[in-house]
Length: 273
Image (cartoon, rainbow, N blue to C red):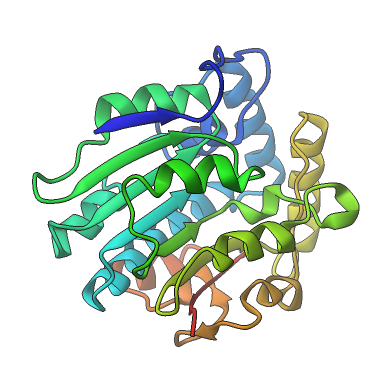
């Protein structure tokens, strides 16, 4: 694997401010986080006891979605907001089905870059690359990704557990415009894979968690079913459509996890036609 740093120089790790990737790592039981990340992760978990279940459910959804698409013939994957490597990683799932699969990861946290360079090694037949860049600047992701991926062929684009960190146009991010920019770069037959925290299933707890994120310096935007579904406008949803994350084509471990309680996250996969 080789890395592509899309910034002028790799930024130092800021250990004085929590980062979503490292908070998520703590929820998944990882060790690649700092006291400031653990502090926020514990506060959010105290306010919303679904946080750990949600992180695990998101991870399992990614596995199922990638496996589904690889089995359907997709051989190229662009994963934005990758997070700290946690096995099995996306490339491992895809290349277990198709060893020749090509994967590009992108994230803006320097610690993710360090771990990606050390740990994200793909199959000999395929390709696994990493781009250090922010989702808010599509060109800094798409240009280097095109060195590994052939955008004249279908690509599965995944932003799992990422859109709730992106605001609407009024908030300065324009999440709809960003998604359109990425989807416009894909040919028909490509796919969009998304999951998103929602207030619909546990409004009080999710509201408290969003407030804690915001006060830590990371704005957080839970969305309703209707708001999240708009992200797939113009695309063809795969069954079962937009649904709570544990219900998207569940495998036995997901059915068992459903007994643990609700997970206030929606998920969906759609095809560009």
